Amino acid sequence: MTAQTLTALVPAGLALFAAGVGGGVLLGRLRGGARRGERSDLDLGTPVERATFHTLHTASLAAPPLRAGLTEDTARRAVRGLRPLLGTEALCLADRGRVLAWDGPGGGHHEHRVMARVDALLDSGRSQSFRTECEHPGCPLRWAVIAPLTGEEGVLGALVAYGSRESAVLVRAATEVARWVSVQLELAELDRSRTRLIEAEIRALRAQISPHFIYNSLAAIASFVRTDPERARELLLEFADFTRYSFRRHGEFTQLADELRSIEQYLALAGARFGDRLKVTLQVAPEVLPVALPFLCLQPLVENAVKHGLEDSGTECRITIAARDAGAEAVVSVEDNGVGMDPGLLRALLAGRGPASSGIGLRNVDERLRQVYGDAYGLVIETGVGAGMKVIVRVPKYQAGVHPGGGPRVHP
Image 1 (tube, one colour):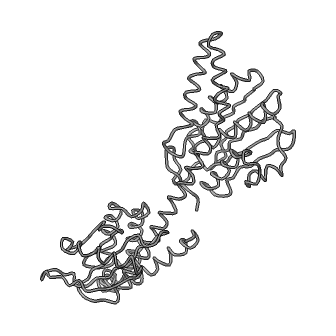
Image 2 (cartoon, helix red, strand yellow):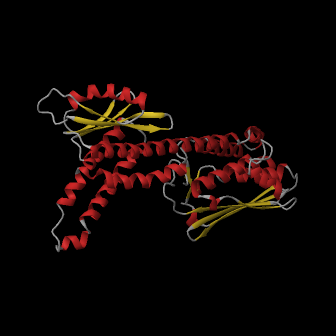
């Protein structure tokens, strides 16, 4: 199911939720509203409006646990909110192998019978209603509806709603709620797949930290061991901190201050190799240092500047790194006076149409920025053959879900 389909299903599901679940709690609220003319009606809306708000509010509370997938913990938290909303005697959520959560009476002697119904549901994939045939005289669970919970891989489990009597309203309500739960589970699967994609892109960026750079850095450090031991020691510490930061595994976002510190270490190591040929200027506004941004989104830009400014040109390279405050955004630019690039070739590289080993770092950073912040925040690159290159990164100072050490947040 596509993301567009999922987006379309959510409001439709909630609308049916509000209309179809009213057989229990909502009907009671309509009948139990305040008398006409009372001040509470004027302040809180009509009984229908209050009931609709209650339905949507309860659904919104049940959604976040389900967005983490179908587990014992998420199922337990979900059934506590969904059972009062349905107005059923009991509610059960099960996966393909066991009962995950039960809310209401009768769980002790009904749970062992549920899995036989779930097994039958896996074969048919269709909702069913049945008499419980309970032998306990005081048990209120006399009738039930079982509805499938589906995902990308088919039927993931089942929702079972129990009542004291046969009810067509309960059949419709349980089916719609199961459909709504399925949408949340599919969104959870989509979130996980996007997370895996971003993690794969981080691994690709780490792989782009050139083995030649590591070898050359160690060789440069070794060259100072006899002539300048203190310089060799400082460079070795810079190398250790740089690699520790680059290969860390905690969080997909970092602070601009940490990213710039890693870049300073990278340039210190590059300077040990190239000496006076490398000239670096840093212009950083202090107010943007705490801004959060995707991990390793600036280092590939600086590595690209060193490559085209020093390794490809063979002349003196001037690199300017600037970070400035732009109101609601932080703007970072990396500029070099290297060989530059043909704009047409650059567009092809960013589109993934160039050589497999070319432009991977730039393309990776561009795609990650667009995924996190939207298409308006892709890289802006100014270049030409023999004219150097300037790469501009814009990031919002505040973005929901983006904070240092936080997990991936993908723009819808």
